[in-house]
Image (cartoon, rainbow, N blue to C red):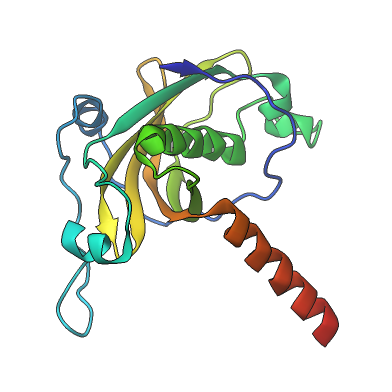
Length: 198
């Protein structure tokens, strides 16, 4: 368990939530025990494959094997700056969705940090999260992440956020493993190219 402080800054845009969600405390408990939790069936693609296998991921990844079930939990006491009231005084002082997701993402980073090849990092690529319950500033929040599988070159984490016995959010976070220098260079080149075209 790692305690996370307020590092300032953050994400300022709310993310849309899926219309449906199914979650239970037993599922969160099974994640923390390291058991594989049931997941809804996915629609298959043209070749009838719902998702990639670890072997498919290994073909695109040259580092040491990543362990399915790797997990990590971070903890933070919600400061006022993390509430929606910090952005709009007319709103209640409750934890914002972006800050909850930030904790979840931090947990995914730590879950595999010691397994990455030297000089590599993981970056977020997709978020599917429901914000289910509001909690006020001063609440102690735990965010838990577990590596559940792979989809192509992406790592799929099951994530959940709780405040005591209250399940406040759950979903999935997808990440990719990259070399930071090249990743930054591509990002800069992309922006420079767009600016030149404009």
